[in-house]
Structures are given as structure tokens and as C-alpha cells.
Image (tube, rainbow, N blue to C red; front, top):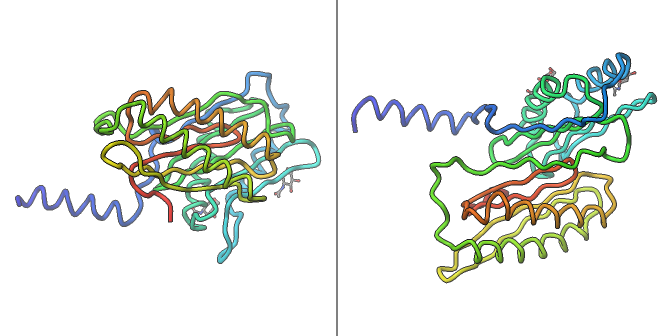
Length: 248
Ligand SMILES: *[C@@H]1O[C@H](CO)[C@@H](O)[C@H](O)[C@H]1NC(C)=O
Ligand SMILES: CC(=O)N[C@H]1CO[C@H](CO)[C@@H](O)[C@@H]1O
């Protein structure tokens, strides 16, 4: 191997070991269109974002955190329950300034970051009921990633079956509404891995409804195009699949 390619390989390996910093193409945001926060609430939001950055304690799961103020601002963060504290903090720390930049003063906002093999969500709203932002964000592996050898129908069916299984799992849980699983499908018996998550505090019926919507969304962005992986995200839930195991 040439020295140059060897150096490049070492560099890539080091980047993988160190953890790659999130870049803008693995972040997305949505802001509400129903007006702006007044100066006091804006100040509260930003002060509470600062407080959110340091939340979580060592030796405990850090699925997320919610802060509310008497005056009517709610800010929350969410990671998968298995996320390491440092990974979750790095993810949340990166997402907060990105959300502040993109939703400078709207009444509600949500932003997501994919970091390593997890994603985190940061959300704020001037109301408690998890806000009204209905749009979805989504990510797929880069365009250069080859499509799965399965046909779209096989992939869709696998994602529907997986969705039904994971919804049952999530229904059985209280605080950490997060479920993972895998399924073999198609003639070559390919294995698909998937995870579903709802935000905390949401009613179970609303969670399941959101996950059904997520299943429809993931067909639009991803399975119809035979993507090997994809994730759809809303302010309330997410659905992620890959053809490798991306959770413990
Ligand atoms: C997150 O941000 C806080 C506040 O700026 C800082 O103290 C902390 O070290 C950061 N943590 C990580 C893991 O980046
Ligand atoms: C937990 C926390 O830091 N909450 C703060 C949110 O913002 C209000 C207003 O600035 C503060 O009073 C709270 O202490």
C-alpha cells in the first residue's frame, strides 16, 4: 500500500476511534410558524438550554431531561436509553446552538442530530403538551450508498412487520418508550435492524399513533427507494432501520 493511502487509512481509523463530530448534514430542525416568544420567554429558553447541557449523572442512564419554568417554557432533550452519558451530552450540546441558530425566536422548535450510532432530540415549546410541530425530518445514508438488494415490496413488508413488533414492545414500557429488534426477510434472508422511540410523558395511544405515522413516512423517504437504511423523526417519536446492528 502506498504511504499516502496508508496515512489516509490511519486517519480514518483514528476518526472512527475518536468519534466523528456531527456535521450539518446529520442535523435537521423544524420551527413553528405561530409567532414569536417575547423577550422574557426567549431569555428563559436560552438560560434553560444552558442548564440542559449539563444534565445527567454518571452511572445512570441518560435518556433525556425536561426543564419547565413557572412562566411557561418547556425544554427537553432525549437520547436512546442505552446512550453513554458523554455521547448524549456531546449530542445535546451540539444540537442546542444549532436549534437556537435556526429557530431564533419562534414559539416552538425541535432539532435532531445523528451522532455515532444514536440520535438525540432537543425541543422547546411555550406549552406543555409537546407542541404542535407536525412536520417530519429524515435522514438516509449518503447517495453513494448502494441500494439494498431487496425489492421495495419486500423491504416495505419487513418494515411493517418490524413496526408491529416494536409498537408492542414500546407499549409495555413506561418511561423509556424505546424498543429495538431485528427481522429476517426476503428470498436471501437479509437481516434488518430497527429501533423505535417515543418522547417521555406521552400517552401510549399517542405514541402508537405517532409510530404508525412514522412507518408511513419511512416508506416515503426510504423503503420505496430501496435505501439500506433510514430514519424518520418528529417532535414526538422516531423510527430507524439499518442492515447492520446499530444498538447494543
Ligand atoms: C456540554 O456543555 C457544557 C456547558 O457548556 C460543558 O460544561 C460540558 O463539558 C459539555 N459536555 C460535553 C460532553 O461536550
Ligand atoms: C433548571 C433551570 O436552570 N431552570 C431555569 C430556567 O430559566 C428560568 C428563568 O431564567 C430560571 O429561573 C430557572 O432557574
